[in-house]
Image 1 (cartoon, rainbow, N blue to C red):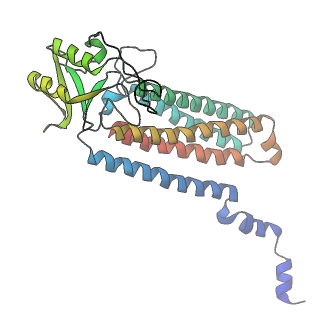
Image 2 (image 1 turned 60 degrees about the vertical axis):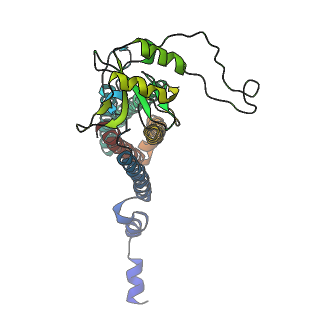
Image 3 (image 1 turned 180 degrees about the vertical axis):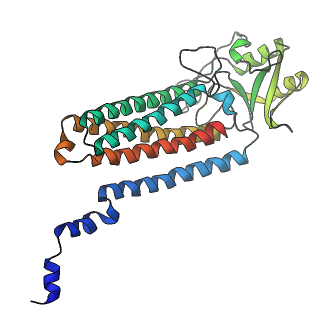
Length: 328
């Protein structure tokens, strides 16, 4: 028997395991998770870069975050710009901390601590997903209302006494007129339209004329980088260009500014929210596996570590989304 054959027989099985099943000193499961994270990071990067280009192109009509995200649950009528978004961000960061503690407890084979910290991570993740859904609902409903011109420009109303936006519901007047939606049986054949706004265009125009303290703000920036507010005579002339009333935001209309902001907001935050929701579901599955002792029997908590990598990734992505959408 040759010396080479003897040498091969003396190689331990663990050596094959170390370099074969554990390439780069990491299990294939962890490596696949890292491949997924890198590919998903590239996807999110593409979305955020596209958002940046769109914002730069339509900088004049881009909504101001402090005016859009001003709500806080159970505090009706109180303006709290960015407070709830900051709270959501804090919750997600705390969930990342509890996940770190769960992974550390797994390394030390402390089952009860893994259960506790994973439970807290699930709770914080569920709070974030619920908060995101609430924010979507608030954004869709809108708060003030506006008019839209034929060219797609948004005309917002400002109270000259306070300098703040004036909701159309506060000054519109009711006119005696019948308003019908287009549907296959009424109006144009085979054509339907979305639900009617709370007030017609004529009702908003008439109410605006009766309130001399109201002005129109257009989607242009002055030398100070603020939206241009027209004087009273210019405002009365400008509203004649309006062709419709806009309430809230959707993929077609946006009372806060350019509709691309709403498109990107729904798509990017929705895509991220789906990742967080998926992470919560996966965490719940892992959580129950920990309770029944699946990983205790295996002698390691690697699954907790792998889901931890995913969870830290979605937390990090939110930091960039938060920066691009809300702070910059």
